[in-house]
Length: 135
Length: 129
Image 1: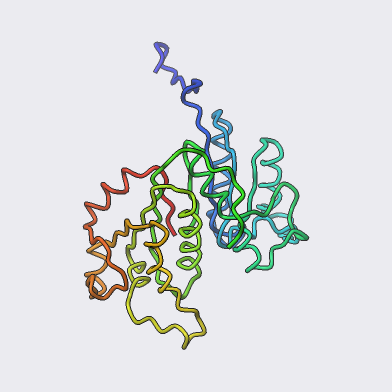
Image 2: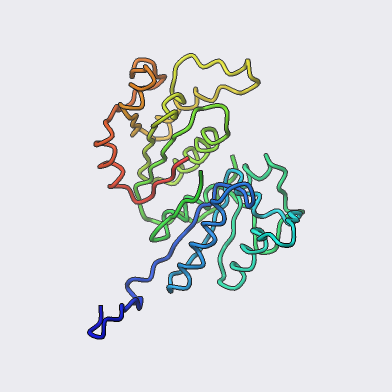
């Protein structure tokens, strides 16, 4: 708290974190993906860096460009793609989980890529935090 | 398994995988095991925890063929080959389900909720499923 009573929430260089995110649920049937998105937005707004979002389990459905929600609903797939483009976030979906669910390169939304689970482990190793969103 | 082509950074972190769900009924248990097997290739300090219905994943004599499922519980026996040796099972979860360590397919360390809280607090990365 500053002398004038205003809370100083400036982030100092040393406080800035590199954050990886794991999303384990799909974009419409579960809140997890929405919460992860809002967390990512808030963290970026605070000055933190979201390096990678890894999608696992039904989370791989977040990459499906064939998703066509009603126009008055949020579009989780498009939101992730937009956030990633604006902030250079690596969006990775797990190949094993994706193939099982029929998510292939042909139906991948721009900004997403398919890779292995190793990308999740690497995210845990190289980031200051790995934040998990799921059921 | 997919090919791992990542650069492996020279850092060792404590990764804990928390299994909370029954082995069949949802895919979470199986897909969590797939993560653990991948993680083992990264030379990290890996531990597994089984709590709640997750303790059923280690139950002996599983016979899921009757519901068209593969019995993947045997894979837990191979974890030692992957240098995954820290396997914790919560005592309270076992007791609530009428189980003891003797009902499990692999030797485990049975810990109380209080112990588990301390072990969990020491981790760098906790992935629950």
